[in-house]
Every structure is written in structure tokens, then in C-alpha cells.
Image (cartoon, rainbow, N blue to C red; front, top):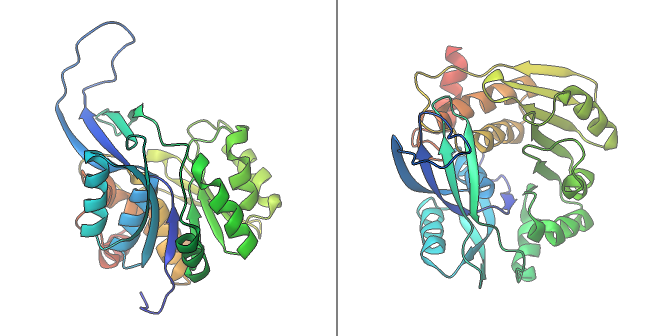
Amino acid sequence: MEQTIKPVFVVGGASLDTIVHVDAFPEAVAQTVWPNRSYKAVGSTGVGKALNLMALEVPVALHAVVGNDQEGQMIRQTLEQAGIGTLISETAAPTEQHVNLMAPNGERLSIFVQPPAREVTLDWFAINHALKTCSIAVINILDYTRPILHEAVRLGVPIWTDLHDYDGANPHHQAFIDAADVVFLASDNLPDYRQVMGQLLPQGKQLVVCTHGAAGATLANAAGEWLEQPVYPVDRIEDSNGAGDAFFSGFLYGHLRGLPERECLQLAAASGALCVSSTSLAAKSASRHALEDIVRRR
């Protein structure tokens, strides 16, 4: 990656998660569930994207919201150790926390035990500087990011967003859809995901990418082209947390290099494969050379 590239500004999404691996999701009856293993890890979509982009040598600035607590300190330390430039807004509320139950096939049941803060005081001087000096703003679908979204639109900054498990109708997502140049989403709640992708493109989107977990991903662009990308198989799924963010980051890495969309999808799939083979949001082995090697071997 060229050192002169402007940074990506990732806005929103940091949590401290308890990851619990179980043989199967429990039924909705009173019971005791014994885990195969469990551990705490920094999580959420902003941190996942920032860590993976940094591993691929893409300069990153991350805006995150944390509380003045032990969980917030763990997030700060993780980002600092990764060398990620951070703009932290500290709140009086506790840091966002999840409990993620993980099935052997990689499926996740996520319980928000501490929701994200809604009232956030923003440092607009720092945020405006980050927006004006970035190549792309990746703005995640949190309520507190909406003013930053509006400012990015006003400044004419290219915007990418990730709708996650959008159902095609939830009004919470509409402002992010309206503002974005590139949209990622998952097909979990979209039986007819192609129809939804086809509806998004005429709304001024350059690209729409829909992921399907183990079934791969589909890309549609403004030129009317549709591309399919299978997953790259792995020997063992260690932890699927962050796989979508790794996929997103691998694609964005290719895009910043000016690669064709087909090659961006391949790098994205390689990044996702590395992620699920690790217990970290960004695999320790993640690098641009590792991604290129996976693609080359396939």
C-alpha cells in the first residue's frame, strides 16, 4: 500500500464482549448451559474494521465511544497497541458490552447486556479534521453517528456504510442508505436480497455488496453487473465474530489499490477466511501478503 494514501475514517462501534462457545444454542426454557470455552474480547463493527484495515497497512482513524470504566480502558489499550489513531468520546454511561453465544458452525446469538450510549458529546474540531483528511468515511449505523454522517455529506466525503442484518424496510437505516456511495449488508433477514440490492442501486449507489455467511457474497454495481464470490474454505472455524468486518476491510483494501471488483471480492473472501480461523477480530496472521497468497492458491 502506498504510504501517501489518505486514511480511512471509521466512525462508530466499540464494545467489550464475552464470547461463549456452546455445542448448540439453548432452547428458551430454564436450564444451565455449560460452555466449551469462553473469553473476553474487544468487539463491535468499528473496532473490527479498524483492526483489519490496519493489519492490511491501510492508515485508519477510528471514532469510538467508551465509558470511564475497566471495559473502556481495555478497548483503549487494544487500539493503542494496534497503532490505530483514535478519537474517543467518553460518556458517563458504561461501555457497550455484549455476550455472544457461538455455535460450532459459526452462527452467533448476540445479547446486548449494555447497549451503546445514546448521549455523546462530540469533539467537532477533531471530527472535521478527520473528515477533511480522509479518503473514505466508513460510518456505522449507530444513533450517535448521525450528526457525523450529515457533516460528511455536507463536506462531500465519499461514504461507505454497513447495514448488517437489514430487513429491507427498517427506517433506522434509511439515513445511512441515503448518504452512502457504497453499501454493504447481509442477507440474513432478506429472503429476496437481489430485489433489495436492485432497489438500492438506483438510489445513487456505486456498489452494493451482500454477504451470505458460508454461502459467499454477491456484488451489484451501477453498470448493471452482478458478481458472485464463494467463501474460501478453512480447516476449522475458531470464531466467526468480526468476519463481516474483515470481509468489508479486505474489499476496501482492494478498492483503495484500484483493483477490479472481482479481485476486491477475492481479497474480501480471503480476509473473512483468516478472521474465522482466529479468535481475534483481526487474525494475527492477517496481512496484505497473506490475503494475496490465499487468493493465488485458489
